[in-house]
Image (tube, rainbow, N blue to C red; front, side):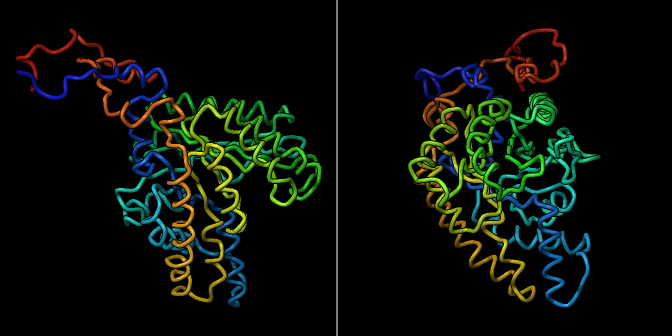
Length: 376
């Protein structure tokens, strides 16, 4: 007689060799849909939310900036309205994270991702952004508060050496910290104009796709989920060229990748999402494309109504595409759901944890696996 399934099992070392340690694996499970795809809502924007709220106040006859408390309530309203239809929510620490958890604006069964970087940043001599961590914040605190993932934004331009070197150093540092604390890292990388350029200038638009692809080649190894820009511009490049760009992005991405929205209108984002999913994306991490018109509504009830109707409808439409066309995160690691179901750790693995995850050495142990009489 024997207990349980005695069929052949997959060793947990198979996951460890792919960087899928217990904390990171749990994070992926928590932020994904049941099928392994990702439909994540971004509400970690600070400056853009403040700016949109200030414009709404001015339209209403109040020429002032929103208060801290008002920005908190804006974010909580959007969370309550939209979180039920996504797999996870990305929020900032300054306005959102603690209030979101305490109020259950993000339901407990939804994934919680928390931003690491600060909004304001220094610039290189050519005007390129130099990323930095939010003062008073860090990977350890995100892990301590029970979040499922750390998110880091690193604006990156491979042809601008000063900022590229500085931002790469920060990415590597944060990646090592996340390994040490065994917490999932989602890395967002975006292109930017510099040297007097604007985002609408031909010089920027012409190199954008190459920048997005080369950035993924250089940075995607330093994370667990990669958040990518659309590599090109709709109506500027042909569909064939955009599809080639997306296939190139997928080929160089070493981790599951999701498509950001970058504030584009929803109709354009929907087109981008379908193209990205067909090229191999695991899902989306979108924000303003879903909810930016919230600030155009005349009053609080109208804003909430917009979020729970139009906002939810948009996310539901995108989510249907994600679930039908997306590549599950485990597929990027060469695994299937059945593979994961057969994974087993060996007796005594906990003695070596978190060292086996790349973290701090485990506490010294006087012996190996426990004897039967020591098990409780």
